[in-house]
Image (tube, rainbow, N blue to C red; front, side, top):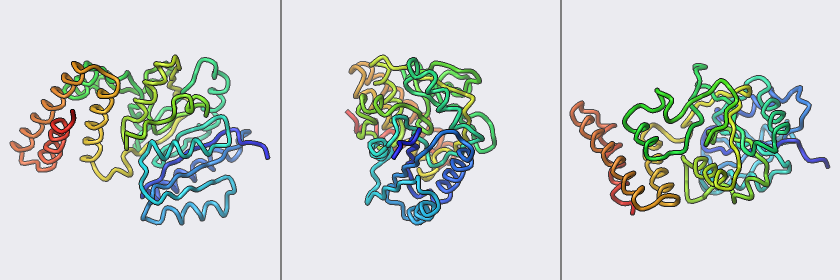
Length: 299
C-alpha cells in the first residue's frame, strides 16, 4: 500500500464540535487535491463525546486513525505519539481548533516540497474567528522580548509576535500549524514532554535552530485558529505561559538570565495584583497571585 503524501496530526481534548469542524475543513480542502492525506487524531481522554464523533468520521473516511488515550497526556506527548504513527515522510501538526481555508493544505505541502533543502519547519498564516490576522510567529523569547511582552504590549507593536504578509524566515511559528519532515522531528526527539501545554513549539524550534534548521512563515496557506479552545478560560493560559518561560530558562539559559526573568515575572504579577485589588477585579488578583506563587516555587 502506497504511503500518503502527508500525515496530519491532530490532538483532541474535550473539543468535540471544534474538532468536527476542523476535520470537515480538511476534507473540503482536500476534495480535489492531487495529494493523498491521512489524519491521525490523538484524543487525550475527552469526556464530551469527541471519541464517538471521530469514530463516526472513521466510518465514512478510511484515512482517519484514532488513538484514544486513557489519560490527558498533554499537547507535546500526544503530538509525539502521532508523529511516530505517521506513514508519510511529511507531517503537519494541526490544532483541533483550526479551520483549513480553501486549498491551504496543498499550498503548504507544495511549497514545503519545493523548498525542503532550505526549509525544515513551515507555518501558515493564522486568522482569528473574525478574520483578523493572528500574531503567530516571532523572535525567540530573550529577556528584552519578554520585557516587551509583559510591560509594553509587545504584540501590538510587533515586537514579540506578528503575522507577516510575505514569506519570512522566523525564529518560531505557532504550534497550531507546523509542517516538517518526520526525520527532522525525530532528530530533535520531538516535543519536550516536560512541557504539558504552551511553549512546546518555542523549545522545539529553539533546539532546531541550535542544529542549523530553518523555520519559515508562509502566508499563502491560511487557516482560522480559535485559540485556547481546550484550556478553559484565561487564567490557565497565563499560568502556563509563566510555567513555560520558567521551564525554558531553566533548560536553556544561565542562572543570571533566570534571576532576571523571575524578577520581571514577579514585577508583572505584583503590578497586576495591585491593579486587581484597586479595581476590585477578583479574576486579575487571583490569577496573578497564582502566577506570583509559581515564581516563588520554581528554583
